[in-house]
Length: 434
Ligand SMILES: Cc1cc2nc3c(=O)[nH]c(=O)nc-3n(C[C@H](O)[C@H](O)[C@H](O)COP(=O)(O)O)c2cc1C
Ligand code: SF4
Ligand code: SF4
Image 1 (cartoon, rainbow, N blue to C red):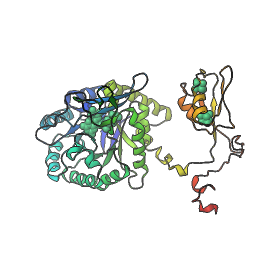
Image 2 (tube, helix red, strand yellow):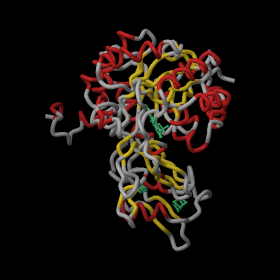
Image 3 (tube, rainbow, N blue to C red):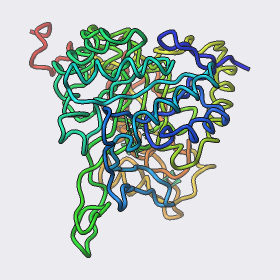
Image 4 (cartoon, helix red, strand yellow):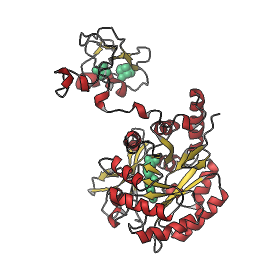
């Protein structure tokens, strides 16, 4: 079985699966059980400054988006950072780290954007023996209104400044957790790097309103008739998180900066995808809140089986392997031509592909009187919509045409050479064509 031992920023853990800073890592009781279940590391629920802890709402704090089978696709929350006393958390972290020296414990921190506040808390965190810290610059609700969380994460200068303070007063790895509630994630990532961050982690939650109660006309979750935007997470945010991760991984300014991937990781495949895009490890929250700590067993067995199949002996063998294949649209090969193909043996004749292609795509699927569905190559632009709406996996496949063949749609020979928009004759900016 492949060895899943991972070294991230020099911090060893038996596998790349860490729990993200959230309710699953809120207290000693949870974290001990998580480690017994097999989790490689945890980022402890965010600590605040010494003094009276924050106060959470006493009504519902979650909203949800479901798939047709009521499978949880997206979770939204209005929870704050830990509402437990700082010293209680520090004592618990110290005890758990002492008992689990082989597991990673990272302490998430969010204190006011003042040097004294960071200078005060960092030695206390260092004394716990934890392996590093994560700066929570991401929480989009409650704390942001107090000038913390995403209010800091949205200003690259603040990120750099606070990261510099942390590097000054703390000598173990500093991970900067980024908010997705910005327009260009490369800017805050660059600021973290410029401030001396050892790594970035992303994403924190996305500003969201998941639903509106139409009887009382208020957003959900509703507290005494009112609602507010909360942080969105779970499987629905994975595509957004992976795009942001890939931007950081391939930007020349931040390429090579270690990344801890977060956002919708539910299966070993999700984890492998984040890692292929450059993440040294992944963090999980919603999947554990939905299915419990035990899912780590499937994450471990699934990832190691896949690695065995592929011949990878260590996670570092495939971390970042997909990064060179992420490009800008203008560099995609316009000479590549494919066609949809329906496997009649698998088809259940539901007609979804027909409806989608006929009404909203290219009228490239024919339906016979006996409901046999077939692709009209003369019309098919290979958009993939039929594949995406077909309920049977791999019933419709996209088949690449061989160079030299004639594309029946355009009547043109499929070229073997790569050609993109920058050199295309239709591109008004293609000076080579003049
Ligand atoms: C209820 C809840 C509370 C959270 N609290 C924190 C927190 O205190 N600090 C933090 O950095 N992130 C917090 N998060 C964000 C998660 O750590 C994680 O970034 C986010 O949920 C995306 O991962 P997921 O899709 O696996 O849930 C919280 C998330 C949830 C659902
Ligand atoms: S790939 Fe697009 S155009 Fe071709 S058959 Fe499917 S939906 Fe129609
Ligand atoms: S969507 Fe798939 S299963 Fe349904 S008719 Fe089309 S090919 Fe067949």
